[in-house]
Image (cartoon, rainbow, N blue to C red; front, side, top):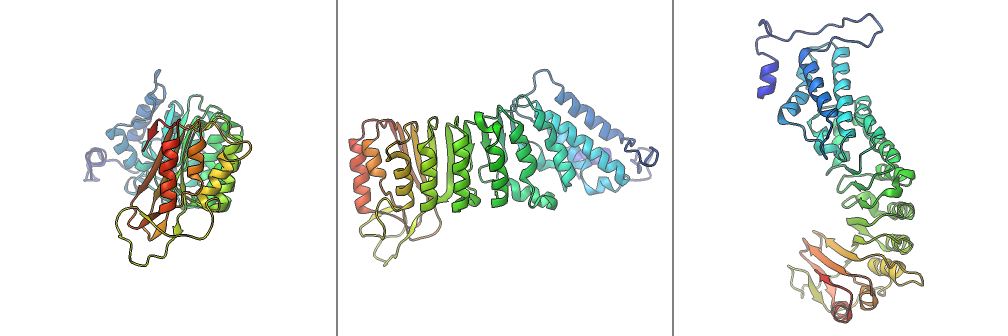
Length: 388
């Protein structure tokens, strides 16, 4: 037991300073309970944070306050109170925490607060998020790695509706500029709920969207939903979907959406690889160039379909200034097809940053003919200033 707990709950339940079970003092049917003194103190400290004249950019609870919250939400503490008093105490704390959040311009749902809570109910989860819906200052919303699996573990009721309160927040945030759900563990149900909110009126000021590492977007349906979001998020300047394998149909749908975009400046994506029959003659280890052929032309691979739809059409996108093609895998052997990337790099006059990143690739190959075309295209390009 840490210092906070030992100070609040003496080991001798019969001692003079021990905390006895708090009985309901209100009449039957009333929701008013006598708050334990430590809960009242915690509420006062949180209320002081919520009322700060110059609130911090991001909520930063002290270790002492985090310890007090952990204590009140612990099962051991709950056994010392009546059920109604414990529930009321928790709801009040979550409500004030939500008010603290609503004064911040940047909110990290998991890291700022939820990680210190134990098991919570759906009602409590909604009580924590509700004040954010009326925030006038929130500009950046971050979920946190594995947010959805972790929150469902704390509240099984959220299995299918974890994104609903989140969607309510997004729909009311007219000035939301950045939404980061990177590696948040979204299911297709979660992504569909989030996307509905992102296509609401509040998304029109969104400039940054990070959906990297969410397997739900890998499917054709997931990318179709993403394309619909891009059609509405007309002010979007940065999109990161690395760690999300983009297939052929998905590449075409995303490319068509990007072609219509006039504000997008930074794009990071992750095309799917194609299987390669390794005859054992190639060296395993790092990414390497191989000689050979593979079924399908340069426009038919995932990256080829995206580049063709986005940049090689009659009305191409000309706003993207930075393009990152990211790939990682622990499988092998596989081939990273560059498709018509060389054709695009050879002719583009607006791209200034180009990055080709391949990591964690024990046996990832690039076709020799495509590799040669890539180097020749880069030599011929006159607009790229940063190459990685």
